[in-house]
Length: 539
Image 1: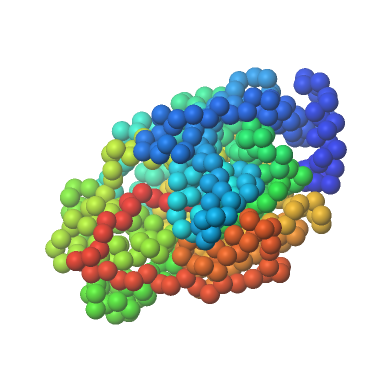
Image 2 (image 1 turned 90 degrees about the vertical axis):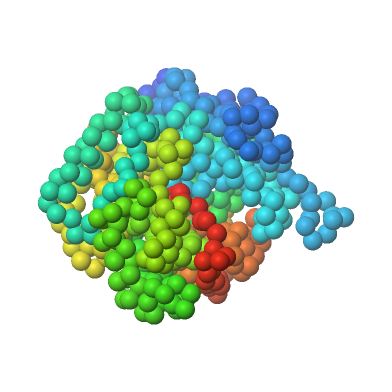
């Protein structure tokens, strides 16, 4: 849907006009029916609110976190039709100043958070309020997380039997043969068919635009006249859609690790750029391991570390570790290290131990966890549906093959893995949308804050520059020389200072600012290394 004029300067007037129009009146312009439906749904949610209570369905949730649901239309063009329920979690503002126990901090409203994906849940976000880096924000805001449509118990989407989701051990050729490509094409077609068969007519409604509309209904249900929102990774994209659709509903917005919102990049080209960026990040990891060759013994140069990695890949291709970990699982473990540098010591230790005859750490970190299969399958289903529905994709395999064969010559680490993850979109059975042209004019949107790590591979840095250019009045804070994905509330006091100043006082630096890189992770020997999370991060 490419209609920026509909949602810009005339947005508030149009919302008022549509709210007064009969619900079944014919839309005058493209997208008007969905916009009117959002107004209807938001008004209904504001009147009903959210009945928060104990989080009986969420394991290990403490008593100070409450849960509830909010109803949203499956199809915003039919706001009185089928409704789905989104699960919501909340921890009330503590009012406690962590630096002055006698001072009562005034409440500023709700801070709604989305961790990305598509397909990630934010239900456990309120728990972050106990961390030192978040206590000042938790004093002033109700911390609100939620599971977007399709995720968890929010009208869950499934494309495949979870018991068949983990296919391990498996191969991951960096230069696949023609027969291997045909095998993966068949799998992609089957997966797309599975999504259509399991979801039926609902499949087309899992989109980023609907996620943005759901966010406005959640805002209203929370009793917030204007939204304070923090989105990470993919959360920055539908947050940017929200800012374009509903600029007058925005109070403050933080975009952490920004997706490139250019309609021409959504989503096929963004994935090509991501694959290219991961090659540089993979080199960062290997250079770090090489600097600590005295600990890991994997080589004192990045090239030598790569040879150690390839040696492990070759062994695993012949004899998977524990019958569970093949080349694809090894690649997945190191891909997660490309997202978060806190994983580097754990992955390096696992690789080192494996090559020295101890496969246990690698099996623990890279092996599939059957107890997580249902959640992983659900996450992958939502990711696929949203990205496939959001935009046109090449439907000719020869385009994918040409583009990625070229790319794999210079960026072999992630390229083909990314292809197989997204290839169902070439054979997608639901209608494709045209991405909204994210853009706001001067004075339409309150100042917003964009955060980016300079060497982030999951959302390459040029995406932050593009979002900064498109959102008038935005400010970009760059963490120089770092590549961790998602930097708010992390290990960099400079970044956290900017986030706190903005959320607590509304203060922003000049148009652009920068922070020195966070400290590199410290190497850990076999004696003190601890098991790292094995789950794949949001993309």
